Length: 185
Image 1: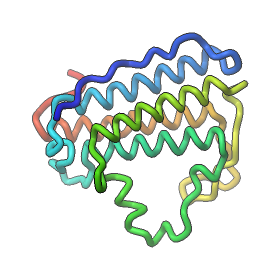
Image 2: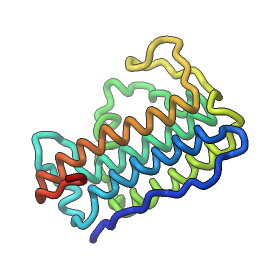
Image 3: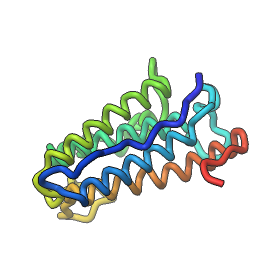
């Protein structure tokens, strides 16, 4: 198995409602996805599932987490807080904290990346359909959200860009630990 470099998605012309700002955010999001995927190229399934650092993170697990995260936040733009609400008992459920970071059952890195491409397409469709990036919903209660906070679609896209960038840094460290390869430089 080999992961090849993904291309930076051309998001085209500005959507009618959300305008040029939406295009620039979508382009930045596509760039962040591209650089994450670039880190995965030319590795075996064993390598992408390995833990060469003190961290429990793997490249495949990071890809799965980013796919899940983008899917949830894209749904939040449409559905509101129910899309990112915590399940009852999450505090004491080890699977809540572990399973989202590793491949389970028949999952492969290729299947996760293919599904992430579908999620990315859906994210773009959602944003293009918005009359404005100001469309917002209240956040659900969670220890990491301020009480009563509201996020706009704009804030969600910025969060996704940051999330992918942060985990791309983790991926760079893991990749360099595997074979010395660096995404940049």
